[in-house]
Length: 194
Image (tube, one colour):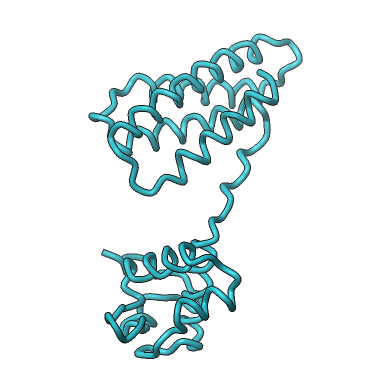
């Protein structure tokens, strides 16, 4: 397997994992693409396992990766559900690690996720206390050098986590229950989101 093939598979894995709420058609397309990637990886793993220079430890990794890939491909898609795509993506990442002998590089952090993390940290540390109004979106755009869509997505994420409350015509406010939902580092506590 060439380095170009590995980079293409990594790029597809990142695209699949970055999708928030894909449609059923998109799930089916992703599943088909991941199955094809798994076939390529299984062929590469089989060739590596037969290579005399391959150590026994790597052969065990390859065997486990192939077993996971075959079982993931054998399970039927539940009508294009996201779970089957996630299962195929996990199997692809595992086998790719075994074939390339390198971990899959981490998914890049989106600007909206970075801004949401920053706002969560500010809420957790008390810079934005419960009931306080957060700066207007235009100020956030200027201060954090972010686009309007990035700020809107970050605020949407925090509203979904019930850390912010938007009042039409008045602004966006820190929820009164926000500190109880966050750890000191700004991470959500286990079980704090419905």
